[in-house]
Length: 231
Image: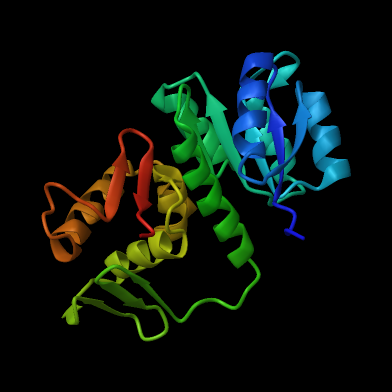
């Protein structure tokens, strides 16, 4: 007997997209609940307790960003936005509202599945004792001792560089917006100083990337934020 897969709530008002997601995810073992409006989504999230939500922003009775904010008032379930809106401002609003990731339509099934795995893995880690160390490829971050090595060689970081890298490492695979990074590393009083992030990210890349001009670990989503690859 095979173990039941994660329960996913699909919030999408377009029947063709719902059929596509139903077929794609069902064939990979996911259990599905569907909602075609913000009202239905709220009811389904409350009654079914999904392990992940796939959310379209353009709903007939409300905006997906506002729905994300309302869900975040009581739930930490991972939310991946699937939207035809590709503007930077839409991505930033959704992520700042509490979404875990953002995929612009059209997208490939393999990319969606990869993003879902990251979101589910991150959710499973919440509540566990904090990891003392994190390794990604040749990069090793000892959070307890505040020591970073690359291919066995120690990398000397400033306190802010370390806080920035540790934040990204603890959220490896997730996109973090400039505002989220600023609030966590510099505090809420610096939430609009996006140039701080750019300057320190450039410095981090010079220290941990093989080729800082073509970064493989510290990935930029232009105008939105940064992600540390988790593999």
